[in-house]
Length: 319
Image 1 (tube, one colour):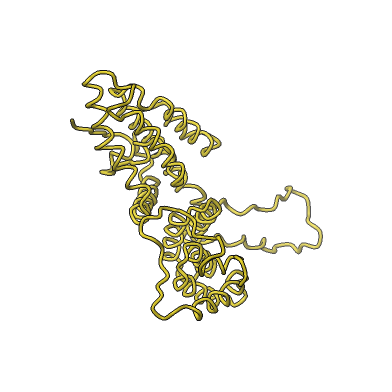
Image 2 (cartoon, helix red, strand yellow):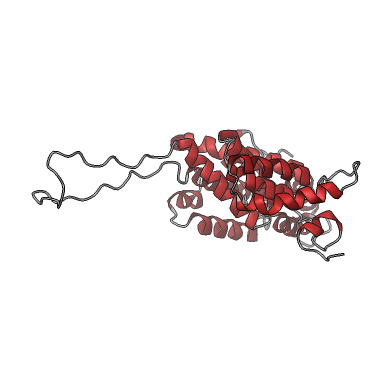
């Protein structure tokens, strides 16, 4: 059976795995696993929900062709990072093409106008998830509806603060002389508007900081890598991405970016705090010891139990 969807993000030759599982585009790995188990139990051929042979076959095909691939893509460390990077690029493209985007569902149209974008979006996605696979014959329509919500959310998120408001001008009442102001004196020049690239970099940094706070280090790293492409000499970006590498137990990469941060800003407090500890830890490593993250650990937090190099850096048991 062909599962063709031509709405939402699917219109851009993109498989919207978040819509297949009906989870928000910023869902963490734990949330994705929980949702996958719910859907898998619902679609499994032995499920009590699939009573007829036709339903069992359809449920099995949805599970094997859509749901399982979506789960594998979203929980693998490398595949998840690549996927989120593509989502970020699509968001930028949608901002440029916003006038030509066509929406079919009322929910998506309401999200365009919603004041609290995050709340409306996540509430709508959660509501769709409750009945997403209740009718297997209607499942593709629900996936399309979720994908339209994802499209609008990405478009609005990428478009936030894309233009700075004009600087405020002092209000002067006509006919009222201003004290100590000579006549024919030009008003002070307005404050310069930051370049567009600076505003975009700030957006990347804000999103990255929010993801770091949620322990979502892989997507945070993607955001910071994009920021550094635009502004490679941003000390804050280097310091933040160094912390991401540190949280992932990639000490050599963390050291490189802390070094860069201090070259650009010798007073960077985070770099000053952590670089000596990393230098000491790396100096204690055997020469053949490689510090890497495990290939398929999703966004799991590194060991903080006090055992191993990482535990020592983050205040584990002292020997």
